[in-house]
Image (cartoon, rainbow, N blue to C red; front, top):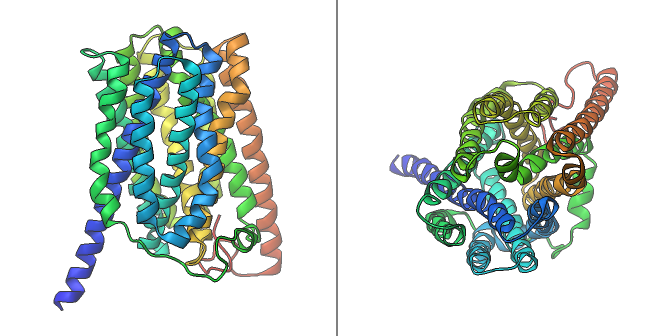
Length: 414
């Protein structure tokens, strides 16, 4: 009797530690997302270089997310998470002592590699710890924790700028990683000895064969293009176009993070109850694209804050839905690889946005760049909807009861 009570309590404590660790990691990343672009701008980086600094970090994360998924399956999430946290701390402290833009790119790449490992390790640990019927809520709480980090990071960094300079701020916010230590210790170190060594071929083939994989991947790219572009340019956009002081730019980022976080758990509960998830992705991506277009034409603080507050829940719901679909695509032996693929696509989309639309922003202004990015995202999500609708029609014609929304491993929901 005592054992049956103790085990759920221990599992619950593990999840809390894991959520706190995720919040601390993303607080560090978000603080860096505010201070590094501003610091780079101060030492001579142009708009494109500022966006590229964001992109190289996310590209590095994309490159390592999938291989790190294999390593998670082989060596366990705890080991990979601990290593990545050390790398993050070293890269951030190094940026604080860097005085030229080219060297900042090097340290951003190293920090991005660590972020790729963290993405695979954390998502794999959460997916392993909950039942499939509760994936939506677990992803909601996990991403709420991340968004809490996105709120706390810029808030702390922005507030600190009242008393310290940008370089010192970058160094000081590294201390947030201390709060990851209990989570890194509590994370399960389960390994999957499949006999395939570190091979990617078979897990990727199994993943690609599932009907939901291609549509949800397109939807993820569509959403991350807009999210990555906003994330890369919002600090400098706030300073140049909105004409806000650094502290108010931090508050704007923090406000968006609060709304984002508060939207996650309700979105997860809703997604657990829905028979299909792709409509959430579709309407979420379209709603966020519209907000992005409007944002590019505004000035001041109040109007952009209102637009971000209205548009962000659409984006939040879309990301929760896509995270659940990827988690549902995984099996016990390919959990790390599946979530590594999710991380690869996520970071690739985040990095491509600033790289593709950065020249438009540089040459034609923020309104043109944001509008072009939103248009491409809308086109991609329409393609996703068309593919998913076609698959549903084909499955309906073959089976009178059920479709891809069946909960069995053979027919994952999308």
